[in-house]
Length: 121
Image (cartoon, rainbow, N blue to C red; front, side):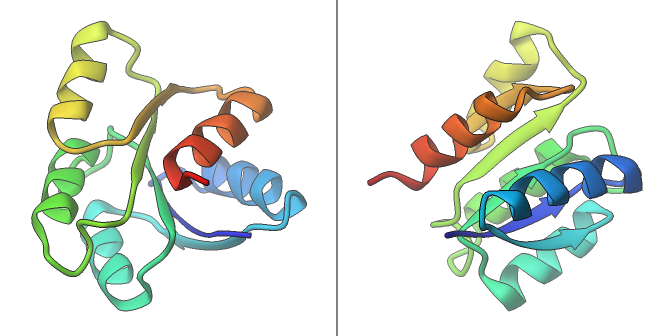
C-alpha cells in the first residue's frame, strides 16, 4: 500500500485519518504545519500527501504550491482535505497543483477513492 503524509494542525483529525488509512494498509507519516510538511515530504518522499488548508504559518494552498514547484517533491500527488467548501477554494487548490479536493468530514469511501485516483493504476 502507499506511504501517506498527513499535513494537518489538528491532532484529532490526524489521528482519525491515520486510523482509517492504517486500517486499509497504508503507512502514515504526519506533520502538524505547512513548514513541517515541506521538510518531511522532501526527506521521506511519501507516495501521496493529504493537506489541510487552514493552518498557522504556511497554509495548505501555499504549502501545496511549494511542493509542486520543488523538483524533489513535484511528482507527489496532493489531496486537499479541508473544511473550506466553496467552489473557489477547489479551483484555487487545483491551480496550486492539488490532485484532489475533499471537504471534512470526509467519508471513508470518498477518501479511499480519491487516493486510488491520485495514485493511478
